[in-house]
Length: 315
Image 1 (cartoon, rainbow, N blue to C red):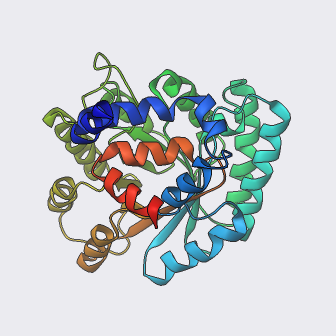
Image 2 (image 1 turned 180 degrees about the vertical axis):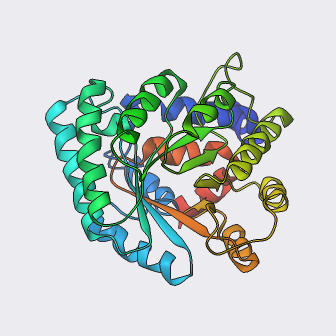
């Protein structure tokens, strides 16, 4: 009990534990189905996840659009190591692209559709989703994954970018390599989504989450994107960063190439404020049954959310 209390009172230790739990595939498979822990964990997930299915997600997306924001929908899943299942999961994304209302993009982890098996399978399945999103006039955004997959993610994105002009990608300001990666991505057409980065990474290749250097790196990336005129999204819940990016962008414009983006259940006041300023805004809604890693990472980003999680679980 003393160790548990220490973890709650030490945000850095709590974040470390949560990120380690997020990567435990045994826990990911066991906790949601546990008869005791599963229902409690689902209550916590409900704040951040728009349900299990496409049908569940559609009303949440409609609500985002009704609030005056664009929407981004992602079917959760990662590290799929069964080729037939990766194809079936791709079918869900194709269905999602066909059923979402206008003003909503589709996001995905490449490892959800085959990258953990082979780059060729991820490229094949990714092209199917790109064709479906192109046919319905919406963007497709590839999500960031752990640094060990960054080269593979960017390589598949590059291949897709040679065929499609609406396929974007997410980059993490935390990674030291991102400044160099940005230079290459600016030559490709799809939107570049800039995030801090939530994964457990060694400090030899990434800035520490609490390091001022991370905020500086984010703003350097934002400056590059703002000056480039490239399609981009500034995805963060950090008020200081939001205000700083707002200041460097200059006069807001409804047809600007940038967006401010926040996640469902987090920061609605932030994108509401940016929308009132006249910036394009987007809210990111995820759905699916594989929410374990996602929810752990959301809690780890701000360990104070652990207290809200306790309230949600008890409700």
